[in-house]
Length: 159
Image (cartoon, rainbow, N blue to C red; front, side):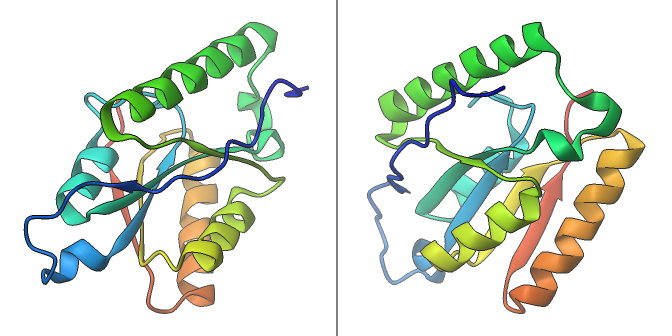
């Protein structure tokens, strides 16, 4: 059970803008964190920061979708510590906080946050397990169907 997870109040990471007339400055990007609970060497976060002044960091706990990849007790402790450290880093470096959601289907949590924030883009790093690749492809199709103007971009994840 992930009873230790708390939903942290959302604070959108907004960096000071040199040029507020730039279209990129008004775009809101959700960065969907999965196993890549770090600021450094994170292609999705790097590209989101380049593309937008408004970045919403998101982690979704959806163990029902993990199939055989469901983390055991030790891995859940590692994930919880990783989330605490990621949130502390986001707060320290960007004045932002990690949004944590619990859902049986990640796409539902993503769709809800898109509706709440008006985000125009979702960036994430790929996972490579066949079941999770299929889940991500289905999630992309569903998000684009539900939010026709949404851009969904994935980046190479680290093995």
